[in-house]
Each structure stands twice: as structure tokens, then as C-alpha cells.
Length: 426
Image 1 (tube, rainbow, N blue to C red):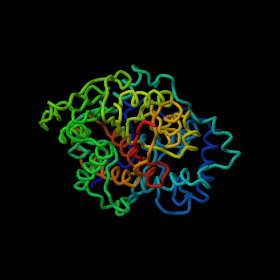
Image 2: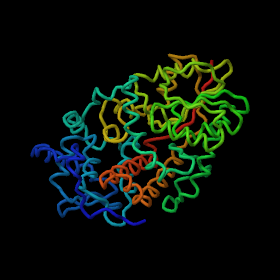
Image 3: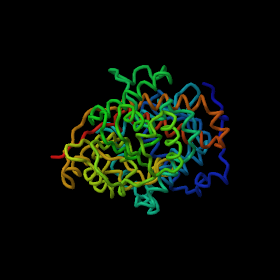
Image 4: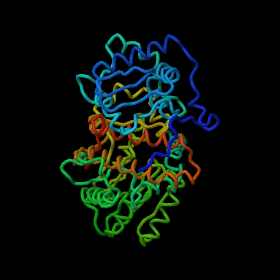
């Protein structure tokens, strides 16, 4: 792979108004520098800032614009670090992979003993620089459609450039003892089979066979619906992303299963009917905490007697979910508006208290997701010239590189996990 980015990136102000440098505040700037010094005391990474190095060594980053970098950190603890990368205020040192650099930071959050980066006196001041979620990202029917469209309707062409041929946008299942081994050699060629493994594992867990009535909630570009139809199932696939639905219909036709799959632009709350299997892959993260009980109630209502539901979900430790659920993160601001990652515990609690469903954890795919994300990022960089031709600029590239690397680091350190869950009626 070749790096096409300039040494010091500068975003186009008109295109990226949120990346305008915040007004300088000497107090916050001093506070941000003090926080860096505290964090770096036992951080196995290096922060090169103003001709000084902080940290214990290891993966290294260089701050190009120290004043702007500190201003961003001082203004918004949740988004400042990522925004500084988008703006070109810092980069990994040459030869340092971005995800490898982010891993030491993610480890602090995943390790119970060290997850608080700052001492308690400093943590008590975090409210000064921590944003809360804006009200305009509410996941009612209208808001959910807007939130989903901002991500999944970006460009079918863009997603097609870096996803595997099935256009599956969720964790693959490599079936190896340690999928994170040899990440540097992770190959795009292995991804297609791993995605098919994942689709088959979901269909097997739900008992999908010829004649099964299947509901796919949040169907993406229809890879799971197509795979189910190829088994002889009858599938209703729903999404609220309009451009995604158009391509899903075309892919279903190309696969020769249009007689078995119906794609509908429909909110999960508005679906009717009974199904032998209800499937939903990495859609719950976009539902929003307020609507989690509604989501699982909808799943239960759609299950025929004896039916099985399978949900694949990104999750985080319960205590971390509770601590961060009201904050406004970089991912919510730039990638998934309105999103919130649940925990396995909260899913178990909701299904116990609000439904008649019982929950079974089938498998954990966190390490598999780390490998999936590395392959996606490598492919995204390799295919950047074609993506740029679709009208995306260098700041968009940095945004997606950071998003994919940031997510990979989360799964590599167990700050995030990905689970397949099976639900049956109690």
C-alpha cells in the first residue's frame, strides 16, 4: 500500500466546518497538556509534541500543530483526539500503523485496573470538556431514518470498493484459534469465505431451511437474505436506507432469488406477520437505548410459535456502557449518529424484563472483527483512487481510516466484543 496523504493535511473549511480550530483557551490548553503528561507516565506509546517525547516508547505519533491539537483536546474530550487527526494536527510516525498506535490507549479502557486514564481529581473535571448527546439524533421513526441514511446511503459505490463480494458489512467468522494473529498479513482474499461462514452460522443457529419464513431486520445489501433464499427460505428483508434497498434489490435479482426475497423500505416497528426465524445483524447498535425494549418486543411479536431469533451485536462491558451512554463520542458525531453500543447484560435484562424471550450467547467474534476491520482498512487504502473518483476528499479518507483503525483497536483490546445471540420464547 502507498500513502497518498500529504505530510500535513489541511481540511477544506467549507466542506468540514466542524473541524474549524476552536477558539484558543489558555486554561484548557494547559489542562490538556497536563492530561497528556499524566497519561503518558505509563503509556506504552510515544507522543512527540513540541520537540518533546511523552510515553514509554512503542508506537509513535507526531503532533504537527501543537496549539490546535491541545485546543481540540481541551474543548472536547470525547471527540478532540479524533478531530485533531481528521484536521491533520497529528499523524502516526512513518512506519507506525494507526491501529497499533491506538491499541495502547484502548487498553486503558479495557483494563479494569487502568481504564481511568486520569487520576480521580482530574476525572472529576471531565464534565467541563465532555459533551452530551444532542437531541437531534433521537431514534424515533423519522430520526432513525435520517441517522441511518447519513451512514449507509453515503455511496453504494464506496462500500463496494472495500467490502468483500457479498457486500457484508459486519464481523466475518474466520474460524481460527486466534484471528488477530498475523494481522499485518491479513488478506482480502480470505474475507469472502469468512463472511459466508458467518452467514451460514447465523442461518444454522436459527434453523433456517427450505420453506422457512425469515425476517431480516436491517438487511444491509442483502447478503444474509440471499444466502437464506439459496437454502429455499422465503425472506422478508427490511431496511430504512433507501439507496441500500435499491442495490439490495438488484443483488437479489442478480442472484436469481427475486421470487423468494422481498425487500421493503420499512422500520422494524412497522413490520407485521409471523416468521419462523427473525435475524438481525449488527443493527441494534443503531436503535438507541430508549428503543432497545421496543426492538426486542418487535422481534418477539414477529416470532411464530417455536420460532428462533438470532441477533449479532457489537457489545461492550456493562460498566463501560453505563459510564459512557450519555456522552457524545467521535463515532456518534462523524460515523454513526444516534448510535449506542449495548452490553450483553443489558440485553439479557431487557429481554427478561420486557419480553418472554430467553437469551443464549452462541459465540464471540471480537477477534474476528479485528481481522475484518484490518482487511477493510487495507482494502479502503488500496482502493482510495477509485473512492476519491466518487467525490470523496482527503479528510473523508482520514475519517474512515481513523474509524476503522479505532474500531480495530477496540476489538483487539476487548474494549469491544461482537456476539451472536439466540433468542427463544421462555
